[in-house]
Length: 272
View 1 (tube, one colour):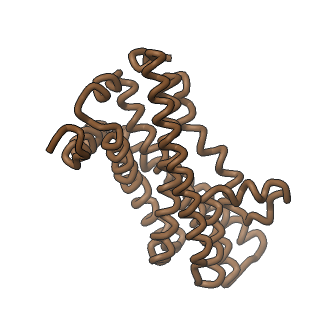
View 2 (cartoon, rainbow, N blue to C red):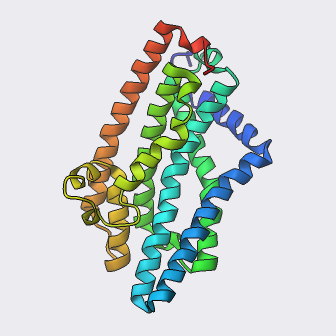
View 3 (cartoon, helix red, strand yellow):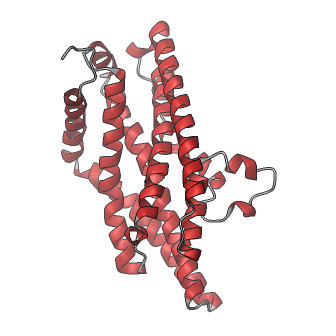
């Protein structure tokens, strides 16, 4: 196999490198679990209090609590998926290893594939324990959604990779001065993605913008499943289609930003 051919071995080697970094630092592992757990407990107990204060009982309680807790868990999948991608890339920036990787036989597509795989690994470490915590404390089982959960996960992780890829390109071009985007960019999506409320809650002029974002289809789909026990396939197909367009756009942006970084000589200046 030539160095120019796509190599799963090189992808696996990069994933192994990031796995060793993660395993060697218990604070990293603790942080991955800590924030999703804090969010779940905060929003979960708040919803319990609101239901008790309003005297909501029965099926309405189940639907309201499920929509909020499910929204929190799916939001964490979206956020941690993007941050898992971006943080692995930042590891290379912090260690000033980007030039070495680009001069090695590692292809850009292999590097991106490794970052995508690592985002899923970091996501599993952080979110799986929290889903079990939701079952134990609040009686909400995200896994019981079955195929619907698999569809939700696929749409969300694809969008997370698109945002992570764009952020990585901006980091290549503008250095660690753009580092805050890895933490903050996804939060711009949060109010428009209608995580905790339906699209109809937004002003009329904002609703078309909301429908341009794949997460909107997931959270509308979640509320539909909880209310009717039926997954709307049209929502998921539309979400996948938008994901494909956004990922292609993010890949193109990453390639152009990488080219500009090479021309500007910023790859050797990864500091702020």
